[in-house]
Image (cartoon, rainbow, N blue to C red; front, top):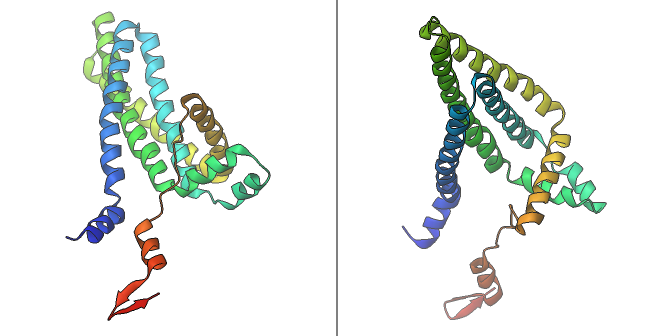
Length: 215
């Protein structure tokens, strides 16, 4: 495989992004799991239940963002950018990178939140069994698992409708949050893509063919 074909292959299947997001999913899953495990183990049943609701809410919120960014169009934000609204440029970047943003929000954060919600629910069941010995573990497991699943699905169902009808407002608010973090960290989350200089060089210099320069 030539250098050009290899670059085309990586760009076509976006393998760089796949490898990057796989790595960060691994890191975030470990971080979230450690935090959830420590919090649930150190808190009583009521506060552990609050942690469960928190992770369900995180999954729903990021699902809304992921859907909003795929439903949005750049045009309204171009008008804002023309009026010197700083967040508009960030919003445009979010829309232009919608596949990566939705992948991160819906798949990475959404799936991690779902897995950790299940693990947190299991920890709560163990706490309840220790407190109330008479309670049946099987019944508790079924009820809490069903509650977690129904709340997640119901919340995401409402969230999808919200994202479809209010995607511009959602993306603008997300862009404002991103701008704050970019200023604090002195970085840019969506740097502009580099142009292919090799093609430009060929156009500038021309190609020599049969002893003649081809422009």
